[in-house]
Length: 143
Image (tube, rainbow, N blue to C red; front, side, top):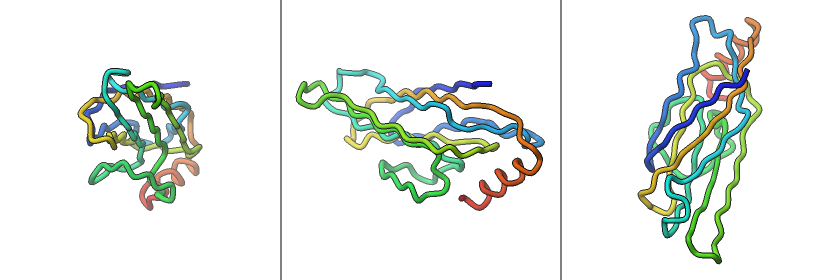
């Protein structure tokens, strides 16, 4: 089963997506992540970095660190009205299974004030008790 989530975020903000269950036997993995600025083609320049984490973040930054065990996905989008700087997007996500809440952060590296929209598809499946325990331990340890 595919579950979808979408939202609109201001720069330097964080959204919570509630996924945890009482028994932890429902697992998820990211199937798709897409982002688009709230006003495409109208801002002078935007450089959005949207990241998905397994834990709440104390602060939001536009720095990407793939060695961070809590990072599940990242999307980077540029949008500019100048024809010599066309819009572009890079999306990368891990194949990791998880069964706890996830957090989406957004930052505009161009220091703009435009919002960004995100669309997230999660594949939902049943976990065995062993898989559920492993997913919970990974989340607790942060790897």
